[in-house]
Amino acid sequence: METPDFGIPPRLASRMSMAEQHEYLRTRLSRRRTLMTAGAVAGGLLTGCSGPSGPAAAPASGAATATSRVAGAAIAPFGRHLAFGADPRTRMRISWQVPFAVRRPFVRVGLRPDDLGRRIEAELRDLHTPARAGVRPAVEQYYLHAALDGLHPGTTYYYGVGHDGWDPAAAAHRSAIATFRTAPATPERFVFTAFGDQGVGRSASANDDVLLRRRPAFHLHAGDICYADAAGTGSTADGYDPRTWDLFLQQTEPVARSVPWMVTTGNHDMEAWYSPDGYGGQLARFSLPDSGFDPHGTPGAYSFAYGNVGFVALDANDVSYEIPANLGHSDGRQTAWLDRTLGALRAARDVDFVVVFFHHCAYATAKHASDGGVRDAWLPLFARHQVDLVINGHNHVYERTDAVRGGEVGRAVPVGGSTDPVRDGTVYVTAGGGGRNLFSFPSGVADSYEGHVTAHDAVRSFRWTASRATEAETVEWSRVRYTGFSLLSVEALPGPRARLAVSALAQDGSRIDHFEVRRSQ
Figure (cartoon, rainbow, N blue to C red):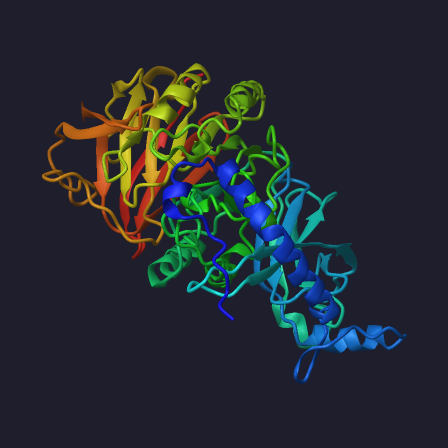
């Protein structure tokens, strides 16, 4: 029998908001999912038990524990990824994936690899993606999350993930033990890295290798994480394959199992199948700091402080004029929260610098150029609170501005230069060379980077407006441009001469840009 097509016709989807598309799908799919889930339970799929010819019903006797342990021993965890809790000094979140649901998942943690004495229960979040005719079968995915609180600052911990039948403390699984380190109690030198627009493939994996060599305390991912949604319009008419996430988490595990992976939300991360705002998939796969104004409604908006730097992640889908699927979905609450959060960070005694990261570009000249919605909603707040550095993705290039003040160049910041945000304004970095296919700059605009510096000329570009039209602009602020794969590496130094030493690295590890941020007060 032919599988029904449960998608929304593209013409209809183009006229529907994210919430309307979700309601349409929920109504059509709810009965089918109920029947499928009931069948899976009856067949034992949700118990993690299987027989030689497929799923088998869970035993009803005392033998159930032994049977589930045998089955659990064959289900290997994968895709481990870390994230800080609200306080990186004392809280860590550990997430991973299993191919089938398992019994009693947990994390073991300790101060030595041979003594994982503390056991923390984990939460199972399942994610169902319905079938669409000619595209794929239905997909079931299972994600586990454990919250580790009450940790000691500046301490290295060893951990292993497991479930009934699979114990990281057992000799057979000790090779899977990994480490993480909590933030120090008082500010000290540290490095963080950043990029967006990664995807799955050789170039994406190569950037992870460069990242690891920097030995960062954590990594900022500026959205468009794996591209399971290929089109990125936030519509159910987008091509979508959730199995891309399985590949991505396997690819990322060598880094993210030890380096907290702090993600925010890009347009390709709006997955209309799961929730009215398209963020159900992100909520299932990631555990992020619960410091946001609305962590369930806008999971990509949160803040944390590490050492002498405060960090703010934002969901730019909420303000984007270019891709309006979620435009205004927070009803202004995210922007109000941003104002409060920037004020609190700027007033904090131990915070020297404030870094903000999100997906859509405030200032860029490549394919997507600049988003007027970001400029209108947030740039006045960045100026009011003297934000020191803004990191974006979206354009698959590296591009960096001079210090921008009031929409104009406040101070030229050439390669190797320095800037004072109090006096000069904010530097905006597009770090979109994370691994996905690269873009180019406008015709006639040359790359300009360390070792290949051209004359600094004005660039003809555009910005997106509220009417979703583009408006041409000629800009002076585009200072450094590079079209290869790359990442950002930032060294934060506290003390009387506190500074952010910012470098951009090509995929071979060579430096393509560097500058410093120092505050006069």
